Amino acid sequence: MLDFSILKRQNPLFKLINFEVMSDVFSKDKRSEVMSKIRSKNTKPEIIVRKFLFAKGFRFRIHDKKLPGKPDIVLKKFAIVIFINGCFWHGHINNNCRNAKLPKSNAFFWKNKIIGNMQKDERNINLLKELRWNVITIWECQLKGKFLNDTLESLLTSILGNISNTH
Ligand SMILES: [Zn+2]
Image 1 (cartoon, helix red, strand yellow):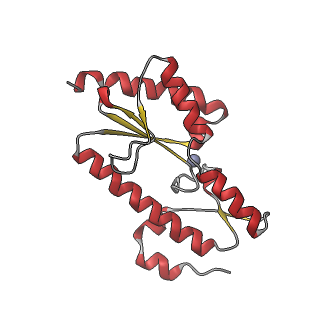
Image 2 (cartoon, rainbow, N blue to C red):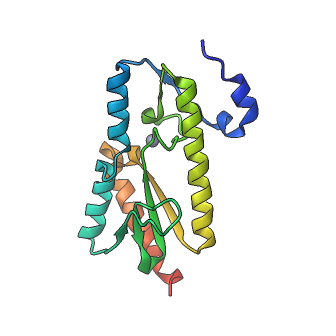
Image 3 (tube, protein in one colour):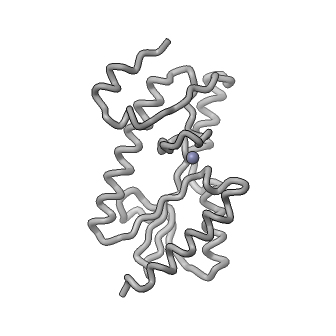
């Protein structure tokens, strides 16, 4: 059994994450291949959101390097940045989220890494807010199956609701 108690004491975020451990069905090589695919730019969830916004007539920048955290989508006119987060890499804290499960092998390594990512995300969001950006985070699992329509609809509502706040 892996012992996370030391890390738990050191890092309060650890308590928030209730990762289930899934059995490691991939070999190491296969796993790193799978992980690199998960991590790559222009991932499918991102494309779904981009296509949706484009079809609704919005124009935007993508992966803007000038902004903290390189937001996936930037709607400058609305002062909105959107992050589309992979549940695994960004540690989706939600017991119903099946995507955030840790592999059994190297679980300690992954957990540490993901906590690091979460802290980075938090820092970037705070920086963006200081720069007066409205930050929207969409999780990969919210774009799946029956959740997709609701997610896109509420995104639209958030963007349009923001018009009054911009200049
Ligand atoms: Zn999720």
